[in-house]
Length: 124
Image (tube, rainbow, N blue to C red; front, side, top):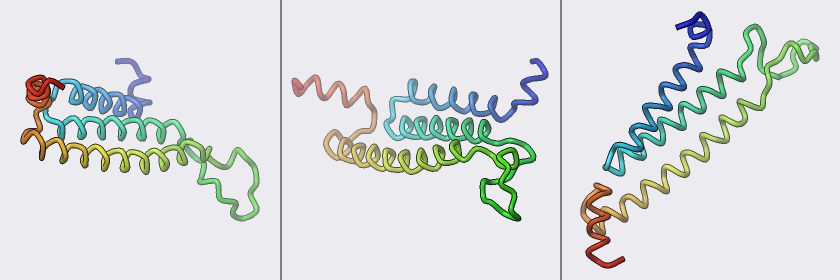
């Protein structure tokens, strides 16, 4: 553990969260838990982008008091990417949950292994 870990703790937390979400996505057989894992991974990416876009001592890029120097403001692109990503991830989560409901109504289980077994029995 070097000194850079303590300076970049936000990025380290984002990496840990991403690992937790990825592990959850791979190891859980339950579809709802897989969706939660994917949402944790999304959140980790947004945290990472927010950490990279923040510069200490600078403010949001809204011209106030006539200050137009670029060095006074943060880069607005990471914030815009995070906002767009949140909107997309909410839509994707809603779609995944809707498909999960359809699968549950058809197969009466949320276990992906059991759904796979039933599909093999049906010959699909």
